[in-house]
Image 1 (cartoon, rainbow, N blue to C red):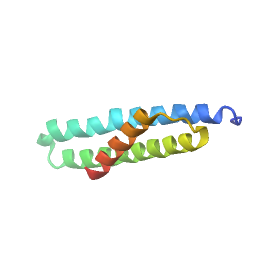
Image 2: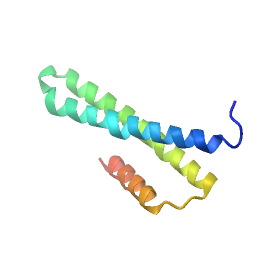
Image 3: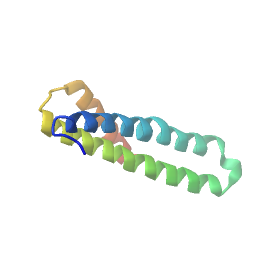
Image 4: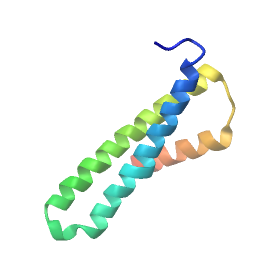
Length: 94
């Protein structure tokens, strides 16, 4: 079980791990598949779509965890928050 004092620390760790996995690993892999694996038609498209959806979903969880952290800790990190919102908006538009 988590104590009340370790909750923000665990959530901060989860926020970072989710961001790395979603934005830094899965989404680039989906792009690489779309760029270099078209010879596997139509498998490349299904892999690309599935990996991009999973990466976006994990990215959404990252944004939600960041919002919960912001509400819980009331820490003002405008550059990090701004970049996160910007990346999320771009991913929604894409």
